[in-house]
Length: 169
Image (cartoon, rainbow, N blue to C red; front, side, top):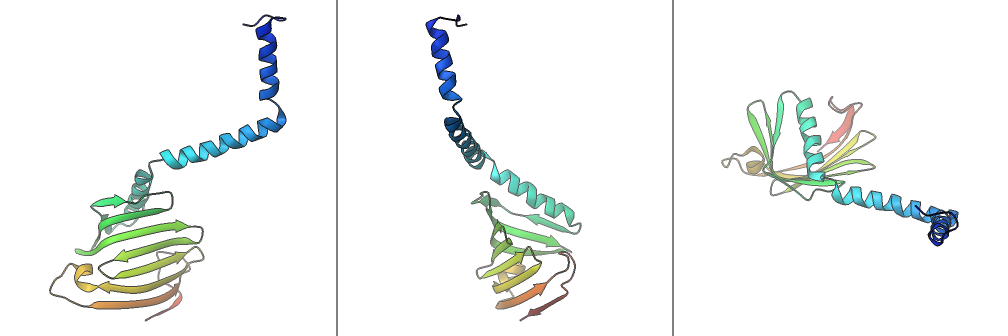
């Protein structure tokens, strides 16, 4: 410990004065907060968080199960699932790749069956669907061939219930 009146004591006091200087302290606090956010962004296991979120959605739906072979491209807002399957009522719906992005406006999904279908579910419960699906890939039936083009704008009072209005083409 520095003795009062000693050289180390005065050097310590000078260091503390400089360190606790209000103009420098604000900058250090700001840099600390930025460092914390960068650390969280870089070292958070986003794949685990996405998997937990998808499993939670799956568990909420009693008669539906999700499965996939791998998860890539995970980040704070995006995820990509390969060979995504939805199992319901003894049937399976297949997607080669499913990409999801969460933003301030809502959730956007890209469903790939060889052709791409985009679903944009907004926070205000307006949902738009546009694109095509390859029926053979979607249903896993090589005997059925063809593309189905879908265009829809739907309005929901509550997700999970039928839409209250909309147009499907």
